[in-house]
Amino acid sequence: MCDDEIHVGQVKDPTVSRRGFGLLTVAAAGAATGAYAADVVERDVEVKTPDGVSDSALIYPSGKGTWPAVVLWPDIFGLRPVMREMGRRLAAQGYVVLVPNPFYRSKKAPVVPAEFDFSKPENRAVLMGFRGAMTNDGIDRDAIAYVAFLDAQPQTNRKKKVGVQGYCMGGPLSFRTAAAVPNRIGAVGSFHGGGLTTKNPDSPHLLVARTKAAYLVCVAQNDDKAQPDSKDILKATFAETKRPATVEVYPANHGWCVKGSAVYDEASAEKAWAELTKLYKANLV
Image (cartoon, rainbow, N blue to C red):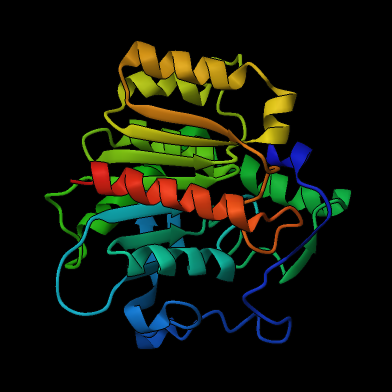
């Protein structure tokens, strides 16, 4: 299920006021703001890719040491403060996190205002245009560039595997990342990922055979209702390819993991985060 079909209504980023939306962080000074700020360092960075320059957020634990790396793919609304907050939370747990602007080919982040009504066709059309500029080959090139950028950071422990997680449209992007850099990606998390199984030859689930990762696939209940066979296709694919995986339908709707979504469900979001934590602890070794 694609984001343009399932997302409805108003989305409000709870981490900023409308007035302060342009002041995302004081990252240029090497400091983070908001939740977990005392535990991490946050910097705005530019990642060179074959297609241009991705304005991204790099977040890692404060203090000395090296840690496993993670790529965090945002949902259809792109890199914005709430995604940075997720990155800070993850970094505080002991990871070097890159949160890219997936739409850098079209616009610098943030690509939507603090309050955004996805139900309006003209608003949807803009974001779908940004998404349409991301070809499969382009996504793969981005994935390679993002992992290489993380591996070049002095905070990254390159002896440990890299994780990748994605929300909504970021779910399929995470599958592609695991296939694009199979020797580095050790774990994949997809949260209400859209279009993981399709009838097309480029369906993300067909890439699993090219990967060496463990998977966590958290499915929204309304996505499951719309495509009830998808979870079974995924389970069969993981079994056939001998990839360790957990596929679970949550009692929450598409978008439940992201604060500010009209369907944000804290209990289910926290459960999904706990499962992600276990996935990374077991596989980013």
